[in-house]
Image 1 (cartoon, rainbow, N blue to C red):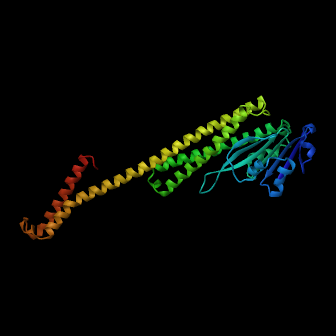
Image 2: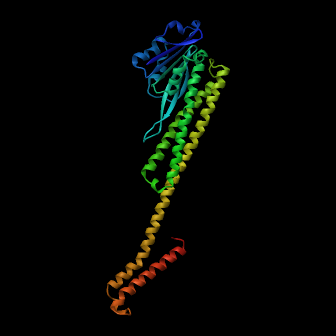
Image 3: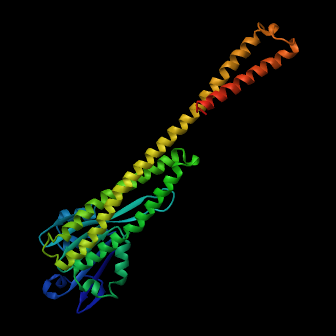
Length: 324
């Protein structure tokens, strides 16, 4: 779906089509064209109307690319990512790349239709003429700022999930494949976060350093604020990765300790029953029975008492050695 906004004479309105005269700087018009999940006929506006480079159009129509910025003759081509947290049993992050064609008098956005930041700005751009009236770069900054602000609640959800994993590590019910799958799933999400945030931070850094002539000093300061947010998120992603590694190590250590405890108990039980087995075997051969005092009636109690004495003595000795 194509949505066209044009700002002229201090007002922003929605247009049904593009007047080619609006693309001329002398017209004084400012354009925002949004392509949400465009079909092939709708995507022809990129080549037929704006005459963008074929390689940038090819990247824009591809399913996913990592963040980058490229300068062409009359525009900047930028790929950034929005993010949201998948609900349900699987959970995890899902990212969506948003492609920007940023020119002197226009901004063209291409995405899969699932961008909350763009949807929010589209609802208010006509009510607030200043949003597009400040220029395409200022509108681009608003979109990017909203996208980056959307990262924070999703990152906080990830942090809450890590807190839950840390609690489950030391619970007996947390032992099992389910916990391991949860840890590895969060590790995968953090890797996705790092792969997206780090190059995105570098893209915004180039804008904040004014590597491109169209970026004014005022806009550079605005991009620096966005850059600071991304730097903090990149640091958080690194911290999360170390934290998940620690959770996994703690889980494996906990499992190993519990296994050692089980093996210790089984070994002690086996050790206790070894002399009992010897005694029952010897008396079962009826070799030593006639030598016990009290006659046949007392032989069972002699043997039972001897076994009980051995068990109590061995348990007492194990406790004295701190093996129990």
